Image (cartoon, rainbow, N blue to C red; front, side):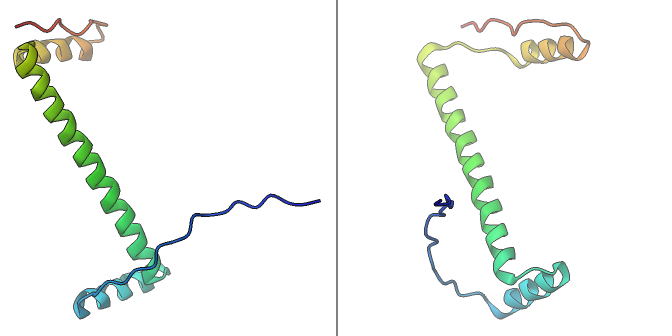
Length: 101
């Protein structure tokens, strides 16, 4: 019987020039954590790219919201939002206020 094995996409091999002091710091941290420098650097890259993707998504949402406001003029004031949040904190299930011009 043939077993199904999960295949991983091919890893991209690349190189990066790491200044000596940073390389030493990575090696020291890897030794302290009982991990390889490669594993630490990969973890750092994943964390960085994930954070930057989230920041970019947030930025794009802001741009879209601004464009929607410019197109429609619909908005809520800060006082309206704060009042709504205050009610939610008090346990009141209050619908979000209606946007207005």
